[in-house]
Each structure stands twice: as C-alpha cells, then as structure tokens.
Image (cartoon, rainbow, N blue to C red; front, side):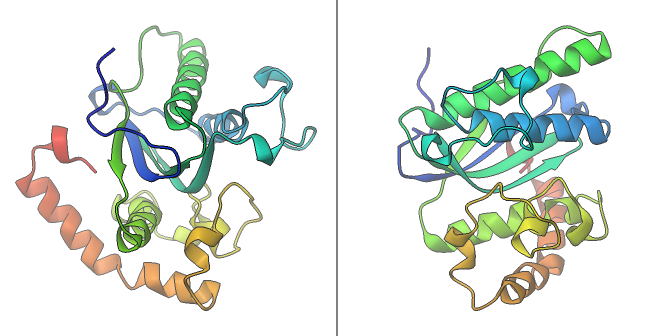
Length: 218
C-alpha cells in the first residue's frame, strides 16, 4: 500500500474530508444522515461493545477512554463530509474513516439496490500546523452548510457540530473545549463564525472559478 502524502501522526490535528463518486449524493434524507452519525459515534471507540446493528447511544454508553480519535468538529453535506480530528492512537484516523466509510457504504448500497464504492477514493487529509489554522478550519467546517446553500440557519442544521457548540441542540459528540476554551463565551464563538460569512462566500466563489474542482473542492 502506498504511503499517504500527509502522514497521520498521533497527537496531531487534521482536516479530513471525502465526497461521493462523481459528486453523487451520499445522504438523501434524515435516515441516511442519522445512520452516518451513528457510525461516527460507534467507530470512534475501540472497545468491546454490541454489534453495530444492536447499538444505540440511548441503550449503551460507550467508553470514552477507548477513543481512537477525538472529534473536534464535523459537518455532513449532501455529497461530502468534513471532520476536524485529533489522532489519539496510532493509525486511529485511518481506522476510524475506513470503518465508518465501509459500514455506511454497505448500508447505502443495500438500501438503494446498488453495488460498488460511493466515496471518491481515499479520504483527503490536511495537517493542522497552527492554532490559527485550527480555529479557521473549525469555522470553515461550521460555515459549510451555509456557503453551500444547504441551509439558511446554521443553528438548526443538525448534521453539523455547530449547534452543539452554541448549545442549540444537546449533543455530546465533540471535544469542543479545544476551541471553545479560547473564547470568553459561546456567544463569542458564535460571532467569530458568523462574522466570517461574507468572506467565506467570496472565497468559495473564487475557488470555484480559479481552481480545478477535482483538486480544490474544499
């Protein structure tokens, strides 16, 4: 197996993303998004636990001390997904993404009576090299549904960690303190994100005009 262009080191942070083959939709409705989120919750833990088909977060408490990755932020879009992850154990990110991708692909193919991959090759990874980049990437991920015209209200878009960050929904998926501890209040973080909307939209427009979509889609 060829080595990754970006090595994945334990203790480091990475922006991880992938999209559907030929830009195909990989999430068509609530049930698809919810299934993927359940995969995320389940496979971030390397522990003895019920089979995934038997698992629900309401009936089984996963052991957070057995995490292979820390999820800092995430966003699921109709044809792609984003994560900001910290690798906790050696090989953790690759194992996590492989398992959620394989599990979800099986579900999607059975549901839609199809065969073959639904994701475009290996996932992409960008190493986070500074705290400034960490904050920017977290904000970029949270703005994605808005600049991608999937929602007009980030607070009600449930397939992103943004509502968790500002307490508009009661989820405990992310290690939010990595970012939120750098702001006086959650409202301060909210303003940090929202103040960047116009700039993010302009950058997104320029990106699609000037970059080859294959290499610059994020």
